[in-house]
Length: 342
Image (tube, rainbow, N blue to C red):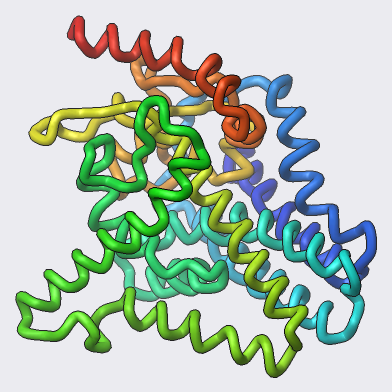
């Protein structure tokens, strides 16, 4: 077992801190968010990069085991969150701090491992990926990411690609309804070819939407109105983190419709913290170049566009549009010059 593989265990820390906060209450509820957003956000500017392309064998079971550990931890995160409210461990404003912190943990330990699992061909692994997405309140990512995003990334046909000059806030407003609409169209077209209605049980987007809506009164009547408000905040935070990641991964990059997706169409980051906290999601250029690659075999490319920092470090700059543009536009202009010269 390689040290690199053991390092991926860091990705479990936010979820474990969220559980700790949910079972202890009070200031402990800030643990997951404080660690993930503040401690790591600052540390990432100083922790350096890990650009090694030291591969491990695809048959090595440990990296996949980490994904299943995330399924278990994310389940415990949700149970501890709802039961913390039910048992009045989480009370007053701490309920909402717990929702915020739990949402941060879910964005890291729920959606990121789900992204890896839904790319697997194995139906059981895809099921666990869909389960993780549903546990974060997400209904559109499975369909849109696999059928739309990877096919149309860096073009105007992909709502998950941020345009040059577009703020994170404008992107958020556009991308979520856009991704849902594109996912629905994809499902409807696929079912239409089979002579089935878009509202049939074969439409996974429709089924997942119904499940999520049906879950809301369950939370209300079993755990109470405060729990419902906290659940909605939790889902919102997880989605904001998801779309923040989408924003920085492809911001301003573009390609012609007949141009094959390559390592040039995704921003890469070899930040040591982002790599292991997010199970190498930050090696996004190679992921889009070879989408079927397991995360622990992804490479870095010298010619791929490089983000000015890691994912945690860039959250604050992305929230401040002038600062974000000052950091990213010189790199984007350099990418455009190299592209035009090629």
